[in-house]
Length: 76
Length: 186
Image (cartoon, rainbow over all chains, first blue to last red):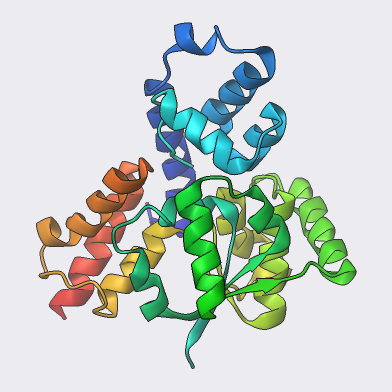
């Protein structure tokens, strides 16, 4: 199969999702307030920091800090 | 012609923690940020870095005029019609519009923005780079020096992951390292 840049991006996206999933401690996440919990779940599945921050109702920088504090890698 | 770029929040807030962050200005003559990007910064080191660079003139602030904004919304709408393309968010769409209007490299970590040149005619000629591609360029242009072997080339990427807690996907990292090693051996 000829490797295309697009296919590489799609494969990379799946790998990044796996990295995020591996980093989550759901017991910890489930103890968070509903908006933050929903934002974390969205980030883990989609990897979009901006939309996750909108769900949480915080700035992108705050969202990033929260992810790191929870041990979830920044893997867009 | 010297390169100039427009950067989104996700790129800047990671890059600000990288030990080689200064090297960005060896690659780009100027980095532009938009007001909405500036508004999203909250960490002290990131705000300090960006404000210092704005003061030094190596970064510049761009306003989002109504025509930029409406073109950004149009790109977002188009991205939602193309099933192979992830949905573009507004800040990244603004960066793509500005990149096209002002001939700027777009710096982002958003996968939809990286995919946009493949599917949106409006973005066809744009260069959209993530940290992965920026580090690649820094090495290929000799700004970060590496020996032409995989171990040496991997170092700046591993330093980035360590400094920023941003993980590259293994296959994308492997591919970019292979490309760099091949180019350095030529």
